[in-house]
Amino acid sequence: MKIATWNVNSIRTRLEQVTDWLQTNPVEVLCLQETKVVDTDFPRSAIEALGYHLYISGQKSYNGVALFSKIPLTDVSIGFTPILGPEVTELDEQKRVITGVFGDIRILNLYVPNGSSVGSDKYSYKLTWLKTLQDYLKIILDKTDKLCICGDFNIALEARDIHRKTTPNDIMASPAERAALTEILELGLTDAFRLFNQEPGQFSWWDYRAGGFARNRGWRIDHHYVTPKLKERAIACTIDTAPRKLLKPSDHTPVILELE
Amino acid sequence: MKIATWNVNSIRTRLEQVTDWLQTNPVEVLCLQETKVVDTDFPRSAIEALGYHLYISGQKSYNGVALFSKIPLTDVSIGFTPILGPEVTELDEQKRVITGVFGDIRILNLYVPNGSSVGSDKYSYKLTWLKTLQDYLKIILDKTDKLCICGDFNIALEARDIHRKTTPNDIMASPAERAALTEILELGLTDAFRLFNQEPGQFSWWDYRAGGFARNRGWRIDHHYVTPKLKERAIACTIDTAPRKLLKPSDHTPVILELE
DNA sequence: GTAATCACAG
DNA sequence: CTGTGATTAC
Image 1 (cartoon, each protein chain N blue to C red):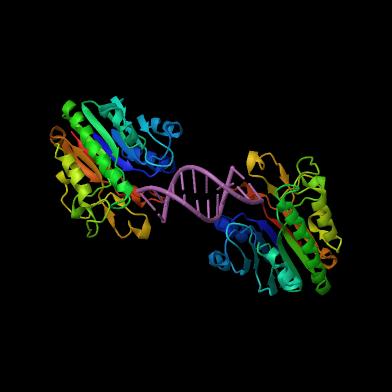
Image 2 (cartoon, protein in one colour):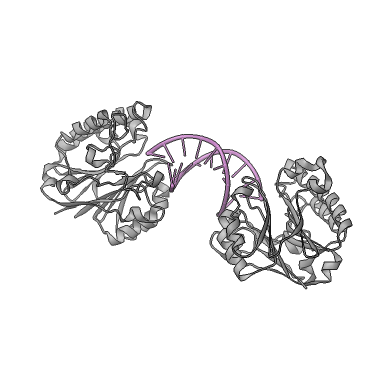
């Protein structure tokens, strides 16, 4: 089975590209981020017409996540609150978390905050959010040993995941962000992409500005993280750059994990 | 020779439609209104590539007029000020007037203010502007007997030029507007379109809202007004509705005057 | 209904 | 550079 993740930067603007992609890439599960639309305006029918069940959590203008699945998901939940309780409802105002179970695999789709710039209020929010995610995962991992977390993490952990040298002041590569994500992975999660590919220059996002894609000035910030039980079943993990080459593309491109 | 007028509602948005139209309608002169772009950003080269000389006067966001001509124009001037002097510079802040001479014919391209609603500040501005136009034309007509004024007048003089009954409160059909334009025409100008067509339901503008074009709920507000010497040479005056049928059209469509 | 700008976010 | 949304204008 295949599980893909794609930050589409507006599902309404990208709908045709998403449906086209699903027709040539009929993955079992597609995790979207930055849908940028409230649930009532989500273009459900175009996706349902392709045989997918939809689970969505969106807001006006910003953020928003969606899960498309070939079979109905069970135990779907939205946000941190269902697991962590009412102390975290404020963090759920931004729609960044949705999860459900496909067969025996829990899939968690995340849109990690960008953080804007190191030291900003948004940076603090990102670190708080990651700490909360860690708390959330501890509970989830008590309940399942087959978890696949995927999404736009807005963090690149290693130099080879970035087209240029970075400094501690670079958002998405700062020590505190990397430490927060590393602590999370130490709960027992593996970067599925690096099971199969050790090359530098493997990117999933290229800034729209200054011809980032044309010059391959990208970052690998869209990830699949899996528990040991799923690591055993991983067959491939690939980045599909084709959608990024289209006219009016998202700044991100899909990443696909294949499990047996 | 053919002289066309077209309110394009943004030359940048409509550029391809304009160049397509000029290729099938290689008129000698095209007068544009509502170009909505400052002169430095006007897409000159696409028009020049079709063999036209350009004379433009634009501003940011609003208004803006342009003259395209197959041969260089002489005695080009912009605004009322070159003729009426510094007392009218304030009226020239909005770019609505451009003129030049093609062979022996002076062409004056106008974008008359819309006026918003009867009694508003913009309505007063429209009436003041029309009074100033009258002063301007008195001087122009002292110098030439071959004048063709064309543009978006934002006034329909007769009931047959409008799809519905109007009241004195209707902008573009109010008595004061009609009187102001009638006084101008009494300087010796003739509506070229009505030399050839007496039918009602001949429109050049349809509101984008409520399917105005589909229901033919239009107004004839784009005109050619000519002096007697040009009236003698007029062969035809037609409205080309084809561009209004395209995807993402201007709300106006071209009107073409043919002279011998 | 369509387009332009601005402010905001990424 | 791209997207959304508020605003203004026609």
